[in-house]
Amino acid sequence: MPIPPERLDQIANRFAEIEARMASGQLEGEEFVQASRDYAELEPVAKLALELKAAREEVAGLEEMLADPEMKAMAEEELEALNQRIPEIEQQLAVAMLPRDSADAKPAMLEIRAGTGGDEAALFAGDLYRMYERFAGEQGWKVEPVSMSASEVGGFKEIVAHVTGTGVFAKLKFESGVHRVQRVPETESGGRIHTSAATVAVLPEPDEVDVQVDPGDLKIDTYRASGAGGQHVNTTDSAIRITHLPTGLVVTCQDGRSQHKNREQAMQVLRARLYEQQRDAAQGAEAEARKAMVGSGDRSERIRTYNFPQGRVTDHRIGLTLQKLPQIIAGPGLGELVDALIAEDEAKRLAAMNE
Image (tube, rainbow, N blue to C red; front, side):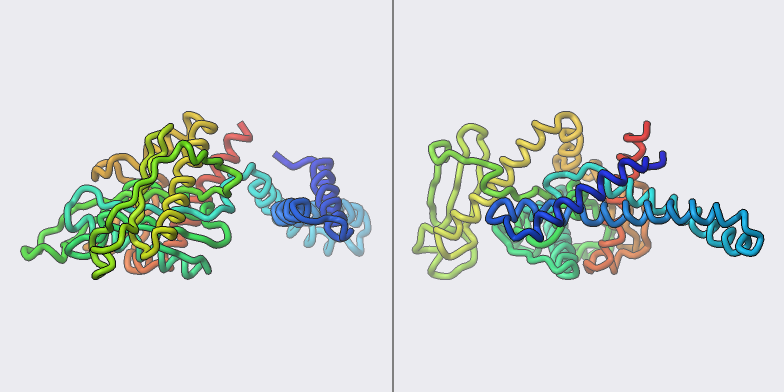
């Protein structure tokens, strides 16, 4: 459905208003921060709206030129090009105007856990973590491990990491779910192909103002950390366990050498999980369906399969198979899958709005 001219004017006027407010020099503090956010959000929409408005005006001018025999041929050629370009701009603008998830611009907590498959599942969880770590590097993001439980054979039984940068949650949110791997494990001497799984959960990290935590609702325990760490592990009660009494959520962190650092990181994870609960409650059944994708870690609940013998990766939600497993598991190749998932989501939301 074509976007009406008055809607284009509304977008352009709103953007000009924000631009003028920022240029006035009268905004300070939170007002300036909010105006900057509004500007950044509206700028790509306004540019497309202005481009579409200019293209339509040019079409009107060229149609008048068709009456001039000397200008007709040139006008027809330019009209043909514009009539092809205008639907493209309208499509881009329609996507840009879709309501945005308020969490898209936020950093995220990335949680990966070994599922079905024993030692091989832990090795695969390690592969997934390194894939996301390298993909994050390509995006200019920073990845900081918050807590981890290493497997004796390598990889992780569980790892939680803090990912910061521009548009982190927007690009990673569709990674939540069960990832399945088919390959000959390093632990297998007979050369048989095994199927294992790991779960991935991506939670937007809220600002402190998004989630208010009453200290009276927390039960905080300190204990002696276990695992690698030398004498420090055996002599210092630096590990932290925080229980949120109203919800029963429990978060532990023991990887930092400082009790203060572990407590700070555990609170980050707790806020992210509480924020996700709030989002689920607000979004209702749709959020429940999305959350159900994470499942229990059973192989049958897969969203994506990494088949090493055939060198392919299949995302079962959108039916996309890429013969690029080495590039994807190495990190940079993951972008093609991420972009396809985002495009599919945008297409579904556009279709729903046009029904």
